[in-house]
Image (tube, rainbow, N blue to C red):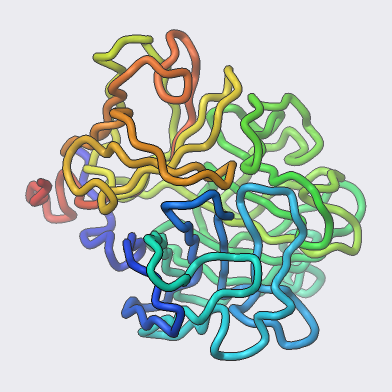
Length: 358
């Protein structure tokens, strides 16, 4: 049985559906490090903030906003006060008013936010520690297998420390200073290929971004690629290691039937991100809050700025998820899909007791 290492996943990930107020919203959750927000009823950008870069612009340093559905450099110079952007705190996070051109707290509109905890600050001076070749700074949650790292690129192949003490199985990297596509590493396609978070394209066979080198429990190798290691430019990496009973980072093969493929995760999912790597289609996001029952009909796109769609695509079960149609985005016969799933409730907790899944 899949005994978990995390008995209460809500300490590390939380999905909230809400109606925008146009004024500050206070969210109670400890050590929020990453917030991904989307307006559900309009073709508006996916907006991402993190505490490694900060939730406001101070006139120098990192700009606070990046989007998952475009190759844009980081933005948000107008997010320059406590009333705007995000204020990250130890026990509460404050979501301020919208920045111009974005829509994460517009009065009267339906929204969703996915929040991830990172409880510990991390920095690595590579020359002092002899760990890696490029300095990194960020925040980590080793218990949940998630870290956020920022670094400045150096030309050529380099290595960065990630702080997790476990081998990352999925990494999302964005060049913050240039209009470069996101680079996504997923262990199921290997380090000699990558996906673009902001694009529907199939996997790209290219050793440049991740240097055809599998990450280790200490280091990630980046090639001399403009998206992952552009000389003198800032980058951010969102890094995921698998934790038994809490997260699963894997792949499945579609069967093309309405009675689709079942994927065993060892828990009932709360969050699911997946993509077809063989046929062009989007990154899709499902969660356990927007539908509120087993068939998670509502889905959003990570890779484009479209409004929420509704279709029987995915069913969450007590120990995994199941595809419900033959659409190429979720279950095309013979195509491979990669995914990241996070638990609502472990199938079996750390004491060997069955979880109270719905």
